[in-house]
Length: 501
Image 1 (tube, rainbow, N blue to C red):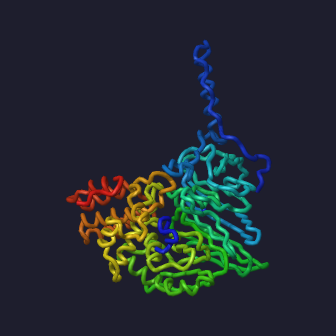
Image 2 (cartoon, one colour):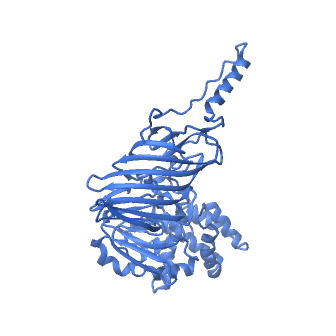
Image 3 (cartoon, rainbow, N blue to C red):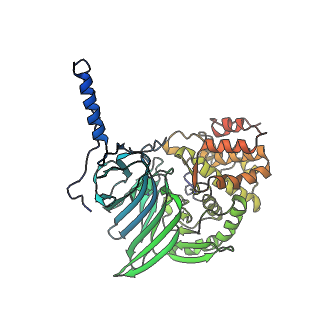
C-alpha cells in the first residue's frame, strides 16, 4: 500500500427454516466434590459435557472460535478451519447502494468442529447452509457463528453457503482511513486492508488464511465490474451484465477487490506475453495514460530484480476517489484513487512479490510488505538517474528527506518491527525505517548477496506466508560470516534514532 504515511502524499473487504440462530455450548459447572456421590456425579457430568460438545454424528468437537489471535486485530480470521476457495456471486444496484450476495466458502477443518465463525460486518444474513443442509446461526458483532447440522471431523472438507443482502458498510480503520465498501460517483470500490473485506463477503479475514477465488458481479448494463485475476466471462441480459473473474493463485482476503463503474478498458501484454488489463475512470484517463503505459517496462525491471512474476496477469484499476488518500496492492491489479505517479506504480507492483505472494503471518509483520516496496522505489530511483539508495538513507537519517520537519521526526516514532498498536501498522517507520533496515542488510551482506536475496526470499515463500523471525533467520543463514544482531536490535526493534556506526 502507498500509503498511509504518504497519504496524498499519495504521491509516492435461504432463511433457516426452523433451525435459526443457535447459542454456543456452555461449559458445565463442576460438581460439589464433598457429596458422597461426587465421583459418580463427576463421571455423569463429564459424559454429558462430552455429549454436548460432540457433533451430531458422534464426532467429538468444539467451536472453532473467533479470531486467530492477531496482535492488533484479535478477532480477524477464525479458528478451527482453513479456507481453500471462495465462490462469490454478487449483485449491486448503485442507485440504492444495495448489495445481494451468495458466498460459497470451501474449507478444511483443522480440528473436530461443533461450530465455527465467519467474519461478516453489517449486511443481513438471509440463510446459511453447510454441505447443502440448513444450519443454525447467530450474529455477535462481526462474527457469524454457524452450528452445522452434522459433525465436521478434523481434515474434513466442507462447504458453507451464506446468502446475504443490504447496504455494505464503509469501515473506518484505527488510523482514521476508510476501507470496506466505498461508494463512488458511478458505482463502488471494495478495498480490504486490513479488515475491510468482511464488509462485502463472509469469510476468514486474516492474511494467514489465503484461498483461490471466483467472483461474479452483476451490475446494470453500461457499467463494468473489475476484480482480481482473469476475466472468465461476460454476459448481458435483461438490462444487466455479469462479469466473472477467476483468481487461481492463493490470495489473502485483504487483497481482493471489486471496482464497479464506468471504465475505459485497455488490454495489452508484456514482451513475454503476460496479459495486462487496466480499467480507468474516464475522468482520470488523460492523466493516467502515460504512467500506465509503462507497466510492461516496470514489470521487466521488477522481474530482473525480484525474480519471475508470481501471478498470471497484471494491470491496474484507477478510480475516482481521490479523497481516499492511498493506493492498495490488490493482487495482480493494484488500485489507485486517481492517476498514479511512476514511483507509486513501482511501489504497488513490487508489492506483488512482497505482500501479495509472500504474505505476512500477522499484521505486526507489515514492515516486510512496506519496507520492501519502499526499497523498490529507492532502487528504481538509483537506477534511473535519481538519488542513490545510500543518499536516500542519509537524507532520512539526517532529517532532511521531507520538507516538513514533523514528517522527518515521524521516521523515528517507533520501531518498524513493533508498531505500538493497530493505528500505527501503516505509520511512516514501517515504510521508511523498514527500507532503512533493508539498506543496512545490503551494506552488511554486499550488493551481490543482497541482490540474490531480493529474488530468493520471495521465491522461497512463493504464495505462502512469512513473519519477521522467518526473515531474520533467512538473512542470517544466507550470510553466516556476517553479524546482523546490531541491525535487529537497533534498526528493526530499537526505539529512537540509532547511533550511526
